[in-house]
Image 1 (cartoon, rainbow, N blue to C red):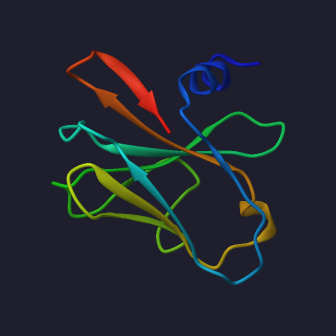
Image 2 (image 1 turned 30 degrees about the vertical axis):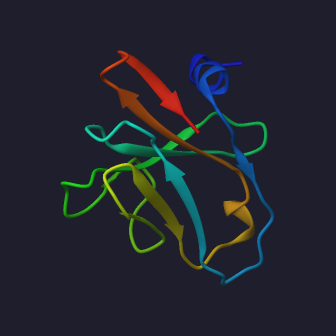
Amino acid sequence: MTWANEYLHRHSIYSIPWTISNMETVTMDCNLGSVTDSAGRWYKQSPGGVPQFILSNYHGWSNPSYGSGFSSPKFTSNHQSQSDYRLIINNVQEGDSAVYYCHTWDSSASEDVSQ
């Protein structure tokens, strides 16, 4: 198990494994609780793989910031409040079936928080 995999696993509150059908749009919501001053970051972990950074989004930004190999319009994100973030995956394919993590930095506790 790699450091990133072990780290996210130890700090996960929950993860969402799901099976999908081609051409659908899938959304996942994440509530960061009292954390309102940090970006929500999304990670994808395929079976047998390590978590990959998809994107980060912050309520003060006009657009998300993407990880290597991920881009819009396939992946995007919006927010409903300063602590509620949504990952949107368009035109889903079989390869998108994975565990997805929502992650942020809680500056008041000086620690990372995942869902």
